[in-house]
Image (cartoon, rainbow, N blue to C red; front, side, top):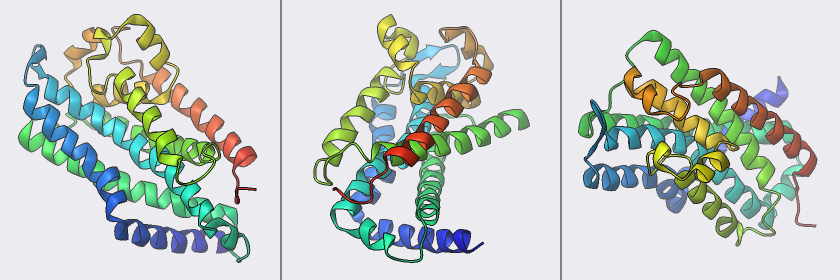
Length: 260
């Protein structure tokens, strides 16, 4: 109970610190919204009966938002905190590592909820996005958010050990996220990408998150536009769970509290 209490207290502090960093707020929460405005306003073509590219793009950006809030945010912020000596000082307090990670998970959850609410609201109001049309789709949407956030949070903590210092973290992490967005069907229709890109993207969780979100927000008829002619819901859950386990194992083994 003490671990949970300290974790929630740490989470509240993480949110306050995040909101005070305007650059982080803009890049993590508002940048995807700006991309939605740009791409949604420029590309208005129809890619399937009853489906415009803007609707397709919103579904992809919601999935990408999980990666921005979880993987990218933590993989950049943790090395910065490590450089500043924050993590080293925390190790000398009664706060356990578990409480620290709970605090980070709370921050990811809060930023994810805000980002998804903004993207859904703008998508429905301006770009014709359809809200989930059945209880089954709402349930699918919920577990995709839960598993996706858990997966990207674990991977973000694990990958935070890769950058050698906080100054270079953004240069290491951001290109990886951008490349995966291009390969995973966020900026382009996935089936129009070269086959080798599709096969490469299928290794990583973002491809499956985007496909899962399409199954929630796009009409069922769009399933014939997918590579497998199916939403592959079971495989999506399996891939995300496998990456979650990988992230947790690497977080336990490789996480560093100092640069030494």
